[in-house]
Image (tube, rainbow, N blue to C red):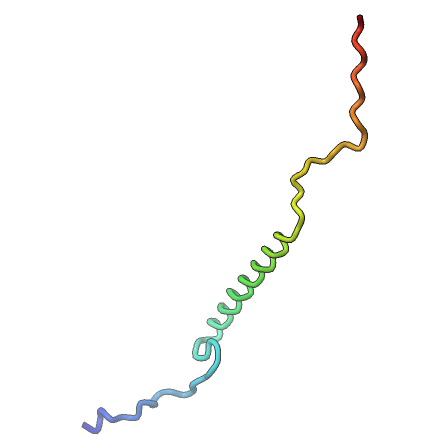
Length: 72
């Protein structure tokens, strides 16, 4: 019966606090990669939405010459 009451903290070396506390360093790097990609996409979308679209065709600088009068 005394074997069932073993110390539950056996084998636990460190308990960390904070975001991604007990994950590996590569897990933290991947988390930062996804976070930066999401933030970059949001900034790119905001900049693209703020730009003025250029849907109007360019107007010529000079008016087109009038056709010659028809011969009678």
